[in-house]
Length: 343
Ligand SMILES: Cc1ncc(C[n+]2csc(CCOP(=O)(O)OP(=O)(O)O)c2C)c(N)n1
Ligand SMILES: [Mg+2]
Image (spheres, rainbow, N blue to C red):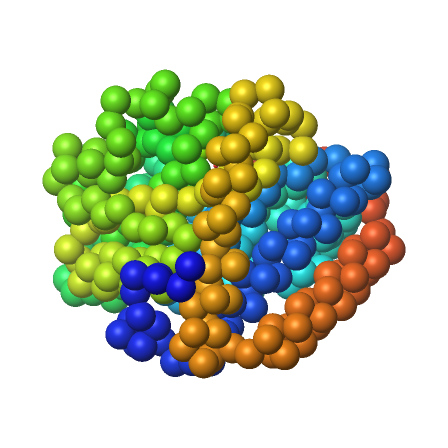
């Protein structure tokens, strides 16, 4: 349980960093679990879970600079957006489609993240559309630097997607463009083995999505997606490479999907129950807790106190968002048509 590959100390992380990562992972899990309850109570329309991806999401986002780097997450990335600066209340405002929802003022489906102040670019429901957008942002950064004759902007574009989505055409076009022009893009594949009900072996002929990077001339790295420190280290190396102007990296985090695809899915129709039982033994939260305890960084009492604090935060966020106003009907067409007069 405790044999996490990377050591926090060798990754340059302080004990306070490791505890901060653990706390964000717990917060993501706890908010996610509450969303399922709210869905089953008929209060939340749709939930799409981060459960089993928390280590990859929090570890990877921890290597980014919020407000500087461009981030194009996909729907599972609750752990990413919490690490970059969303508050639990902002997450719940999105779930309840309230006016104060930072993603869209209550227009989008839940989990369609986007936040201008954090440079989190809003995505669409068709899977994979964010990937060419990230390559475009990388190209803009490169052109900006070329025009200046030196690196004046060393931001990176970080973009994530599932392994099923990695088989779509536009993902390959984006990786090709980024490879050809050495763009500062971090491609992050969160591989949980399923695209809704379709297992990986039925939709690609390779075991590792990371292998595909070789076809575009940049490194592809397979990482244990249940180890947040390994995910941090791999992302940090990719970020440093991109900031230097050396081009993109494809990171493949081997994650677990601990829930059905979404609140509208019944995975018992296609997923053997012993498979789920087996992967639950590798729950990233339990693994990281065991690691932190073995390294004397976390005690049982501290963990209990953290869980209590988070439960309180989730309760408060839920109550605040539920009580928050819906968008005013008079604002219906805002963000649909331009509100600025044109000549
Ligand atoms: C272009 C497109 N095709 C199909 C869908 C329906 N759909 C939504 S999520 C999904 C599965 C994606 O699987 P994967 O990329 O592995 O990500 P995961 O949900 O497993 O994290 C599908 C097929 C969609 N939203 N967009
Ligand atoms: Mg998948």
